[in-house]
Length: 480
Image 1 (cartoon, rainbow, N blue to C red):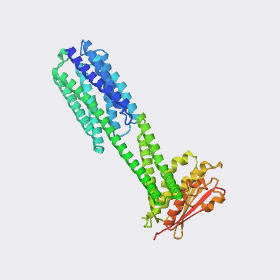
Image 2: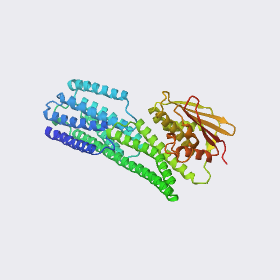
Image 3: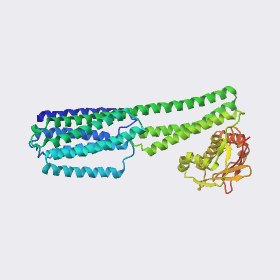
């Protein structure tokens, strides 16, 4: 009988080992979504626990006083159960260091306690303690899975919840059989057949739980692939729209000026699209390394969304260049708009070690097109960053002011760079002006002038006091 029971444990250990090797092979073949380390290590520990327990069954003489390898095997089972529980917990929130330390301490306490029970206790008492502990783990695990499934439905997590519920049911059955036995078991042959059946079936359910977790990982890979494909299609669509816009401009006027304008538009669009590509590459790298936190994920996704909006706003602004239609306006707090643009440019500002000074004293709202005026602010701030990056001045500062004026709002973008050469200032807002590096490819400042003029406002340049460049923009409160 001992050989048969040991054989059951060896078979289950072999099945779990096969699952582990298959997962590891798949893990090496793809880098899109990494499996949870809690699940992987739980499976590894469970394989060792099953093999150790099976070996212990072969060598046991007195069930009431087993060898120390039973303490090792049950401690490994305890660790595997904790790691599986931590996996379920991590589905809803990150595992804190305090919780990790608490579980690590509980492992030490369990080893000492079970070793004491091995020496002084009985087979029935040890089995009862194991059933009570694992049963409490199963209940907590089921609650975590229910919480996750409410937020994000998943068929594989449903299977995992069913398998865990079955484990809880069989653990309760084992406890009931032990309590009802009524005598001290000292030989393997004295163990009730029903207890053996319930124990083996519980481990089978545990193996099915590991398979369900593997299915959940595969499910996540499929969802990530689908999401990546959608994002790629969106970027391709945006790139196609950019190409169509350039193509239409070339068809409208095949002059050298139109060709240069197309190149300028491409340059303007390449900035947000290039930033999106870098963020996607960063996300893929972090995913392949398995070191992507929730905060990093949210930050990258927010950056991608902002860059896509920037590209969309550029396209909308360029469309409006050749349209005499009305612009869609809404009441906007210019201070909030300035702060939003600064969030977009924050990484570059920090990289260039630029000090930002805000003097936002305006309180009135202006009726403007949010996307177009955001593009104006973005162009001016990017120009200032570019000027400061090549400036020879030791102090690098970017100052933005806003104040209420009769009939509207005035805001100023000022930097401490080298300013604009005197001979370039008269042509600063002309289309395709290349006399100053501040205007990029000659489209940015011309587009700013065009947008502000469409809003009935004005934009002008002047040398800043103490050196540097200063752009003064006035926007009326109401649009006709």
